[in-house]
Every structure is written in structure tokens, then in C-alpha cells.
Length: 427
Image (cartoon, rainbow, N blue to C red):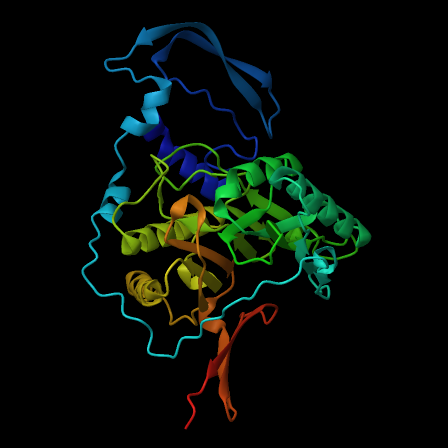
């Protein structure tokens, strides 16, 4: 049978028994007969079903392929041309026709520009900072960097990861305990070299990752901040806290494949940590050409699809904290408007109770991967957004104002905090 014919049956089995429709839990294996990358299609001439185990409760069988042959395709594409000549899916085309009709108006709030001065990197290897460990087993390590001191990018990267491994070992962690990693590069043009070294340290189930170019101190090519998690065997809910990883590398019409050794998302308990998403068209892996609005909408759509894939019925309203990285401050209002519009549309379409939306933090960086203009990175919860609590605290001083906004999860176990400092004009 074809996938179209068997799809309803697979969904029925999934709902009744919890079987993954794609057989990701080992329920069954697949054998691909044809796809756009194949020069010829595989035709099964004869087969038979072999019962491996006739157990009354859980029978096991397999399909034995007896005779097969290759068949020419009407318009075969070479493997090298297949990706470039495939037509984008409809959802991607809809994003591409977005037109930059509105002005990218700057925010009404006063903007603060931080001018970083050159700093000495002689103490770079001592910048590591460990946060306290939470009750759920989370802990941050930030500031992992190392001065180059005449070394090549490749050697400096290796030293930084060796330093990170040593720091993790002090707290009895391993690289496999890292669930979210922030990679700050001094120069995005070094991404290829750094990424190749990075890949050698992470095998299966790598952490979710965010990569941006940042004004690091002189002589420091990259810096690493990461979130680690290690569930204790003594916890009563150990199974609930186990790590679930989504690591899709194949080209599809669903969401972008990984452009590096990272996972699209990592789920621990009810928390979902998503990797940074840029406006890549899934079927071509090229950036959307519709401008910043198109990139912003397409990348946010990727976030939505990843959340739905991680856990059914999870959506943008489940986001507790959304970080949006842009390359120009005039894009800030664009992503803010898109964020609010997307939340409203989702609420209207699903007729859900009014949700307490997560916090949105927009940060301007010099460059993003693939020269993208926008990158979304979110942390979501599978809680009830309508049961969340939020509050705002404002404190005015003589020369500045501090604004603090907090959103607390319905379970009271997680919270997002946004702290902003605005300078006041002299009177």
C-alpha cells in the first residue's frame, strides 16, 4: 500500500496504542522505493510475509523482498541537481511572496547602544561561571572561552572544548549532559572551521544550539555558554525527566534540516528547548528571498512545526521565553508585530482560553548564520498557558528606569524574567 492509503490506519494505531506513525520507537522499519534523489525507482516484483514470533500478545513479522528491479524514471534528476531543481512547497511559496510594504518603524522606547571597548583576554580562561543547580537538575555554565595567543582558529576551538570538558568534569558532567548550547563567534566567516571541530565532540543526540556573531574581546575567537541537565536516580519522577531529542537531518517540506551538528529540540520533562531557527526554505535549504518579514514569518513557522512535532497540540502559546535575534535595530518592530499577530491568530483559530503569552526579547547582533536577518530561539512548556501568572515591576531612579516583567508557568516550577534598563534624558 502507498503512504496515502495507510496513513489513516497508522494514525488510528498511534492514538490507540501510542505507536509512533513513523516507527521512530522501533515499531517497524521502512524501505524507500523512490524519492527525488533516486535516479531510478525500485520496483518490488514479489514478496512474502514471514511471521517471526507468533506471540498472541505481541506478534512480530516482517516483509521479505524476494525479487526487485530498477526502473527508469520519466525525468530523472542527478543527485547534485535534485535539491536545486525541486520546486518549493506551497507553504514556502506563501512565505516568499511577502512584500516589504510597511516601514520598519523603530520602537517608541528609547534605544540604548552599547559600545564595547577592546578588553584584555589574558584572563579569558578564568571567565567560567557556574549557576546554582535547580531542583530539577539544571545548571548553567557561561563564559567558556580561551585567548588565541597566535594559535589558529582550529587549535583555539579545540582548546576551548577541552576547557569545557574539564569544567564539566569538575561537576561530574559530560558533554552528553549538555542540552542547550550558545555559540558566540567573533567572526561568522570562521563558522565552517569551528563547526567541523564542534561536530567531533558531539555524536548522537547533540544539544540544541544557537549561533550568532558577537563582539567578543580581542583575541577570543568564540565563547560558549551551555545549559546542562542530569537527572538523579533518586528522584521519584526520573522517567518524566529523561531527555528526548529531535535530530532531523533529511531534506523535507516539513522544516529545515540541521545545518550543523545540533538537534532541532531537546525535551526534558515538560520543558522544550528549541535550537535557533532562521528563514530557510525546507526543500531547498536556501534563505527566503522575500525580505526580513518573510524570513521572520518563515522561521517562526519552523518553530511552530517543531513544537507540534515534539508534543502534539503544543504551539506558540506554550512558549515561555522567545529570543529573537536580528541584524538591524529597525527590524525590532517587525518581529514584535509578527509575534503579537501570530499569537492573536492562533488564539482565534483554536478558540482557546486566553493564554498568558511568554516573554519576547529582541537582541541585535552583527551577523547570523547563512547571513540571515532573523533568528528565533524559544523555550516552551507543555503546561496550560491560560493558568500562567504574569506581573510587571517598574522602578524609577534619577537617571534611569528599571522594568522587570515575569511570566510564571502554571505548575509554578518555571519562570521567564525580562529585565530592561532605560536611560532618562537630562531634564
